[in-house]
Length: 175
Length: 198
Image (cartoon, rainbow over all chains, first blue to last red; front, side):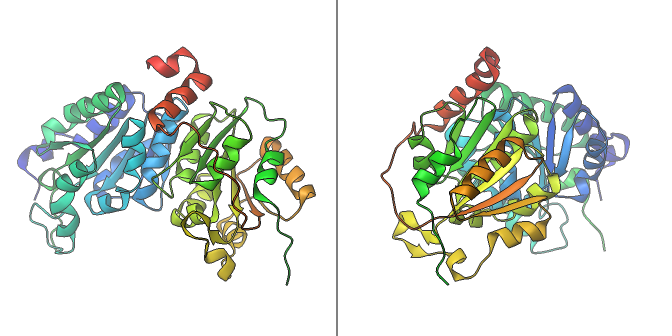
């Protein structure tokens, strides 16, 4: 179950509002239930070019390409896809590109699927070893401000930043 | 069947003849860079010397950000294979200003010229057709190169082209290797002062 505050704080909408505040123009995603509200709102926003990717690997290149072209962008993904990004992250680190991703976490808070532990438990170590600055939100009320801070760090200081949304915020699937 | 195979370097030079600042190029990995750089240093070329498989995704992000410019993703067949899922992704996202140009020599040229997927029957143009690209070209001769050059500049894309080249290995023409410098030069040339100060 999600923590009690999550029921009152609309952290999903807070992420979307941060995207608007930051004037992010491209949002790329590998679908995830935790991101569904943001994905749906971005897809119908006339000021945002939003769309799907087949693999998280593509997200690094697409976002770096957006920056080459003068636009801020964002990658939405799930912790299980981190492994797919490792080789591509060399573009962001070698080029000192801003690369902002928001990741919903699995494999940590009451996870039922043991396969999710591989990506979830290694997420922070793998990202940090790959040169990505990791910021984490464990409570719904802090999601919005951490996304804003992480985005500013990425776009103003030209670095890859991953904002992890803890599974405690999202709520574990219960079967 | 004996295929008519083009020489890679002069083919790329012919493709880039008469280039204007309206064309932005993302190229990698290895030989595709030497080919582009040998046609003339240009800050509107961005090169990936690593992160193999990322040329097409990078070109996609750029094309979406700059819809009024023409964008070319220039890569070898192995670079494209490594990030193959970007082929259908580009078809779905469908940027009209993006051209995918694959220099297909059927070899892993940089690693000892081992045969690659495309000389074992994999049909990249067929993959593009099946993915839904509105324009797919297979180039086997100079007439085809000239048609491709026109298409890169004018066709409502996305365009997908495979240039069938021989496995010759022209000399290395090394560009600036530092991607941070490449990025800064590219953004300055494209965006002016904002590109450096943002």
